[in-house]
Length: 315
Image 1: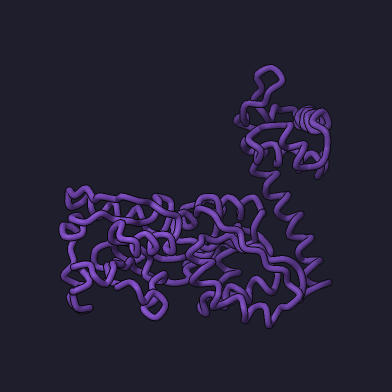
Image 2: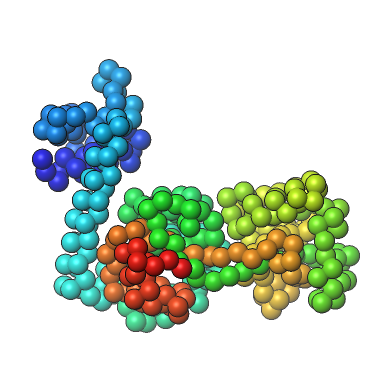
């Protein structure tokens, strides 16, 4: 058995058992991938994949165990490469940050300029998407870290560490009747009152949408959600043109920047939420990744992160 066979098995699983796609991603031929997998199965004396004719349909029971072992082996192979790079070129490399639009727009601009000053030779790349997609990117080593509110802490294979806590904010136009409430009176906002108005808020996969739905359902209310969007900037745009009131993450509202809107705190209605950074469990991190994590949240020191990755503690 050899690493190439392991790589073929892993990529076949990642490509949803499509040998043609696996071969294409590995820059080799489909017959070559198929032959290597069959040779590994013969050597092990078990079938890794369930087949229907020539098509692979899924993993066998022993194949599922083999897949887990191969994933661990390949992770350590990747770690060896990273160790080599870290000592040979400790201040240069690449860093792929998978994040939602909200984190790219409101969190990372506070961090990336300083990071660039410290590591000018590190090539940064932001990959935006839904929280579930971001988690998958890290698990499949297409990104080094993921930053999001949902999904990361519930994804097997990821270590999710807290970055910051936030609450929702209601945004309305200055001429809306809710805007007449003085700021302290926003505590008097209730779900029954909000349900009277058309609402613009996040898609179900983003920024605490689940807690919004659950809060209304608990009060037996059906909100009139007229538009769902992927990010707060779009929501604010449609509030500004009069489509309805908006419910967004508090971090996305800045009175100085959003002068055409009024924000009302809604933490008492929809609770508190935690934005987290997700890292693949057991992975080796370059020095500059540790620096980034501590820039994101001072509590995420190197020792804290290493303990979490090694499973010795959780946050």
